[in-house]
Image (cartoon, rainbow, N blue to C red; front, side, top):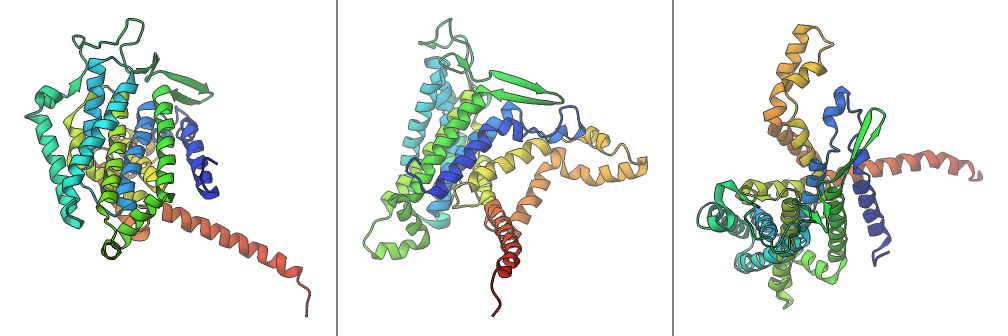
Length: 397
């Protein structure tokens, strides 16, 4: 189907089912229960799942497939956001021109930065990309203030031209009149499910980008990128020049990041320089490694994993903890809260760091490796269960 092998088609269908059914999957607990704290089916968080999924998929093409580790990919995320907001200011709130310009602008910047950075490899390439990203971050706060609005961030004002905006269209980001923040809430007994227009648009785009990533992985171009990652020196001895391939991978990866930035601005029409900081670049590296670098679905899982714990654990405060342990005697309740407190709320980074360490130590291949181990155990157990039945039908000698 769609030119894919059976295995890849199945993977695409699984991702499509998970994204389309996310409002149900991410809200497993009743809205009024104590466990509702772990529900993640609200629009803003679901949008972040798929947008950062796009960001991580693109980064995986450069890092997981080609082996080049960039510490400055957040620069393209920020450039994409700024480009989209400028389209809102000049043309109107229709998100299509903004998304289109985000991809094109990020691709051009990636071409420039990649052309210079790819003259080196290994740690030197990583440091060059980090330097470019930090320069972009500093410029957005200082020299380029007329374009970026500095610390305040770029946003849309009533005085902006918006040449193609009409009174019939909403004054918030929309797609031909369909507002991105439009949400339908389905109440089913004690459960509540939100179906958001912006989320489903981002989810459809993510599925398209995931499909493109599959085609890149399985193409001759993808095989060349894998050869570069395996042994670039040996590839040079064959007479092939790897630089055009690595530059193409860098530009494609940058365009993915720009698309993610444009979608972020389309969901919330505000662009700030903090999206270009080195911490944002480090976050996408963690997402890719955590999910499984070089795998297809790994970056999507890693993005969802980190964004889930970032948002859920950071909301757990002492009030929530007291609700959870209220059934215990006061002394034990206070003792447990004192133990759990450093790992939630403002201390969620500690929890995420420990979980990341555990996964890297016990599952070097990321979450995908963990899923593969579970699948092998299930298949092995099933084979063992079927073995006696097979032996019963074997005639004795």
